[in-house]
Structures are given as C-alpha cells and as structure tokens.
Length: 204
View 1 (cartoon, rainbow, N blue to C red):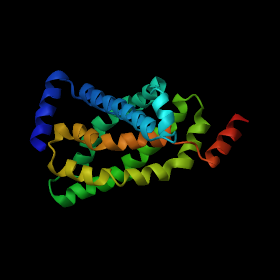
View 2: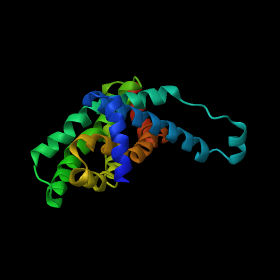
View 3: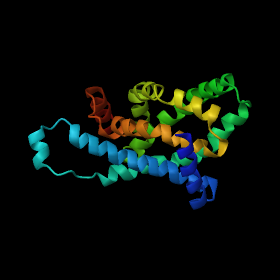
C-alpha cells in the first residue's frame, strides 16, 4: 500500500512541481470528488422509494459541488503549512512524538477546520455572518466528534511513517471518506427543527 502511495505521489510531484500548488490541487480535487460521491449516495439511498428512484433521474447539484470545492480550495494552503508546522513544533520520530502531534492537530486544526466549514457554508450560501456563527453553535460538536473517529489514527500514521513531502497527500487520503460524510452533514442532511427556527429568527 505504501509503495503504491509513494509511486502515485511521485507522479503528482512531476505534474505539479510547486508544493503549494500541488497541495491546493490535491485538496480541492478531494473535496470535489467527495461531494460528487456523496450526492450519488444520497440519490441512491435517500428517503425516496425505489419506485420513485427508477423514474427520477439523478440531478447533479453543481452549485453545491462548487461551494464544497471552494471550501477545499481554502483549506489547501492551510494544510500545506500546518502539517510541517506541527512536525517542526515537536521534533522527533517516536510514537510518543507522533501522539503529541496528533493531540495538537486535533485540538487546534480540528476545531478550526470544523468551525471554518460550518461558517463558510453559510457565507457561500449567502446567509451572512450571523448565520455562520449560528451554524457553528448548532452543529460544531456533531461534526467535530465524528471527525475525531477518523483523523487521529490516520494522522498518527502520517506523523510517524509518512515522509514530510507526502504528508499533505496522505492527509487528503485519510480525509477522503470523511469528506463524503462531511458533505452530507453540511449540505445533504435535512435541517432539524431547531436549525429551521434559528434561520427564521435571522430572516425575521
């Protein structure tokens, strides 16, 4: 698995020679593909019956994919600089060092990333700053705790075994399945009554 990962990374390195551009490309593409898969899953396993699904063609929500990709584009530079920053903050190559990096990563970047996605979603939807803060208040723990089930093990491997110049790619690899879930949580999940009331107060 690691040998295939390394070979793929080298091909990317040749195609996108500038590291920052490569990080942005990888992250943005990951968000785009994840949303497309999420929409396909929602279409196939959504609340409509099989009979209705047979008659209703799949309609790609391009605006949703564009917004989710825009969020990924904004994360590209952050991931590019954050991963080596954490590695430099706590030098070493031991499991204990990797564990410390994971704790910092999840406590700081995890909180920031969750808040950013929820806030930027409302901004891109045109709902304003206050709606962004309300979205964080309503959904932060739901999203953050689910992310904690995926990223700590993957990031532990990242900081312990993956070469520094491949760490952003690895981070996007372990985040791929998560972003399918994230797309659903942010865009596909039906709003709860509390959320609807909160949006009504803003509109009013």
